[in-house]
Amino acid sequence: MVLAVATTVSSVLAGVVAGPAAATTEVASSPSPSWRVNGRVYAVEVVGDTVFVGGTFTTATSPGGQTQPRLNLAAFDVATGALRTTWRADTGAAVRAIVSDGTALYVGGAFGQVAGQPRSRLAKVSVATGALDQQFRPAVNDNVRALDLDATGIYLGGAFTLVNGVQRNRLAKVSADTGATDGSFVANANNAVWAVVKNPTSAVVYAAGQFSTVSGIGRNGVAAVSSTTGLVNGVTFASAARPTLGLAVNDAGTRLFGAGGTGENALSAWSTTSGTRLWRQVAMGDIQAVEEHDGTVFFGFHDGFQGDTTQKLRAADEATGVLDPTFRPRFDSFWGVFAIGVSDDVLVAGGEFTAVSGVPAQGLVRFAVTSDPPTTSTTFVGSTTRWRYWDNGTRPNGWEGVSHDDTAWRVGSAQLGYGDGDETTVVGSGLGPQRFVSTYFRAAFTASATPVAARLELLADDGAVVYLNGVEVVRDNMPGGQVDNSTRASSNRSGTAENAWRGFVVPAGLVVPGLNVVAVEVHQDSPSSSDLGFDLRLSGDVPGTR
Image (cartoon, rainbow, N blue to C red; front, side, top):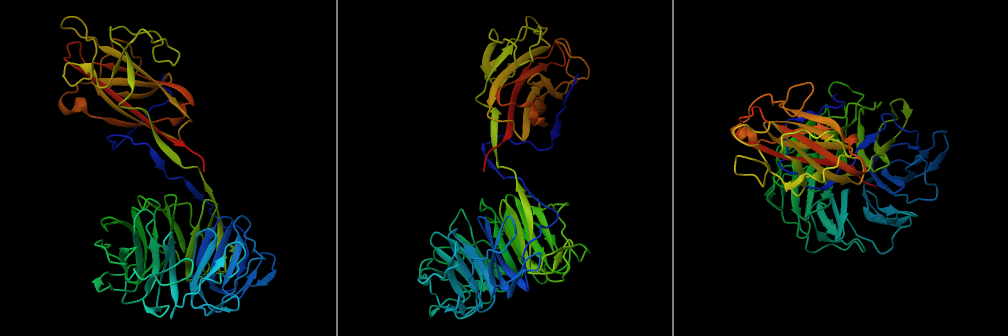
């Protein structure tokens, strides 16, 4: 009896390369009660167990109504949403951007002082205490709206034209220690920069905003420049909006996501190498924020989405752009979401609203995140596998089971078969003009853990039945019902069909930690068949640990 039957995969990979796969991120559909602020939030940064928010507000309020003064910058506990009462770094005006290296918090905006001390629109404070760094003292002559960093410095974008008295039109780089202007990085945008993001795998910085040129080279709202020199590179991003109000890049550095403003209202996903737009999602108003985490792209906007004016925050699959149908929080304000921060534990959205899905949440809202461990794509059976085969035309009793003794079977590597001349291992075909109808193959492999998904690729001329640890998982070009050594394949395969790989999804739970066996019986459609061919690959996504 067939206990599990595979589902055919429409497109099959030519091979499987082991490597990390994205973790699965699941966000709660309803927000968690948290402290809130009495104004707008324009910037969110999650650092470990703390979420920092910046904007225009004067007070933080607990779910029970307790208040604490906080001017434009505040810190909250990721797990509980409670205000970090010992952390304080008030600013004199709006905070528009926050970025952290894990120990220091860099803050940009419109302010002229932080913690009562002069700081010109860019400051550095301690993640642990909020204490103002006394060595980092850049002078920026207009608003800072965007920040990112790497090991070589801090990248900033905004409306400024001077940084430390040096001309830098709306895009600049400064020392992370002192704030001194980086003399090598020069990239002049002809209008405001709203977002900057560093590619994590290459020496490229992406900028977005209202500009139409960077250093005199035409770039409509989105540009890629060298992180060392600021020189514009050759990639242009198809159908980019001007303005583009936010940017995010995936961990692999292969995809850039842009929050399109007026005229487009589209979240766009681009290839970072070609600039080709891969997919988009269109809202009723400007896309105002975007963030990527573990294969999911979160985006915030105003007005609404697909006719629903309560929607201001959605989640899309990074690869396809397909929306998560379960994540549809309801916001009570037109302006919605301006900023997003996300980690393995929490999703925080900031903006202008007072309640989300009926939960009081002024200025910021917190959703719990459940992230399964990342997985590794592992090849269990592949090109290096040594197969045992039984080629005398009989059917061994219990041959498909894990415990079957196959030490008397012959051994060879794929492709196995006869008659075509392309076989690595030639198996017996029978005496005279009548060939054996069936030939049997077994391969043992070990698994470190049960995978979360498993894939099988099969080359069989003419038909085959595949068993995994004694359970039938694939029946390819074979009739239904009981199969024995005289059962013929359903039809003849010749030409390209006899060398075609066919893909199947198989029950991952059949793979167990330790020893496993895949067993295959290959059948001819006729005893007079002149050839036989067989090969198989089996792979799975094995869970790791965080």
